[in-house]
Length: 174
Image (cartoon, rainbow, N blue to C red; front, top):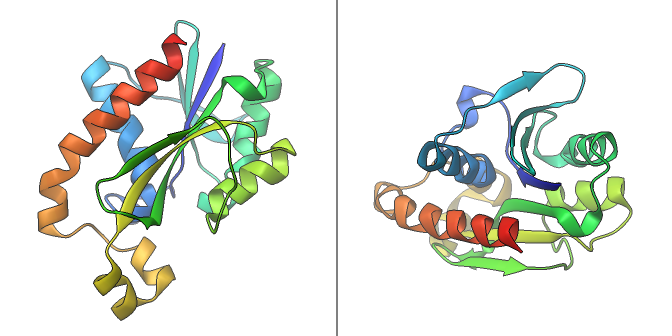
């Protein structure tokens, strides 16, 4: 069993914000793979099960995502090596997609939460580059991650999300 986690914030006001890149990536994956989401009030995430894979979008807000990850990991008895977390990264140039089999949280509070709850950082992650230094300097980090993509960036999203989908499939096949 594998667990694929998209990080983001619940609520329509956060749709298409940089911080919701993980949610956006899973929604794109679901659309292209014809999957649909379910709600589970006992575990704090929207989820779906497809074969040997469980997909979740934690609903406790970005910085508290680790709770849902640990709940699903325990409930389904999933090994840390079978977890993939997808998140944004404003230090990575926009449109860059980086896969790592483990690593540090850096400044990403969602990954810090996952690390805290799992007591390790030895899980795979895909970082989606949302960097836009000029805009980030004008807005500050908090407002920047909660901002929506520019029109030019929106036009590039399908290509980026397709690359993320391929990396998800690669993870699930290994």
